[in-house]
Length: 116
Length: 115
Picture (tube, rainbow over the protein chains, first blue to last red):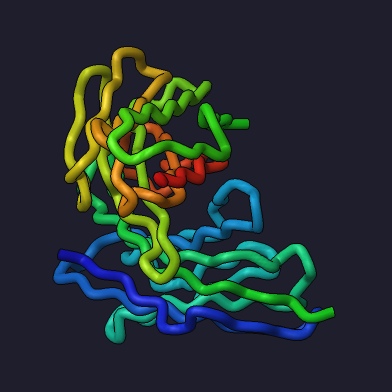
């Protein structure tokens, strides 16, 4: 079975600085998808960024980018120019590619605090 | 925008009660999911459904059942609530398919307390 591990329960960063959240996963499959989801306090979970494992290029969405190291099974999220609105729980998730119902496996989550 | 709604944000029930959590999505999605979120454990899949009247067990189905009589509605049922079912429950929906773009969209969650 696939597992996802986020080893940092909490992180904090100064506003406008850069922070990296770590995620590792375990799978025997060669093709899969990886995601970062954001859950702001008392608000709905939303997708931040996604990566297809067969793509070598790291995904980027504005201030959010990933460092995908397939051999090391590592998928970290970098947030540049941190803003107060980035404060949230962040979840890393894995999904098999050949699976119509899209079952996601989530990590434990990292709570990110932004210090003004 | 996709909208996933859940019937209650907060719910307090007593041990042994039958509890219904309702989820409705308005985007004609085939897939619907129920997760449980606990501190330090992340989200764990309870049940999912890929079509009306179809359901499959997730990773922690014990003590739960589900119902999907209409495409837009997916209900989670706690037949006899217990204190260890106190948790945040999240519903999600998505389009049926294999593409990465088929994102799961989440509801706001129901925080259930069982006394």
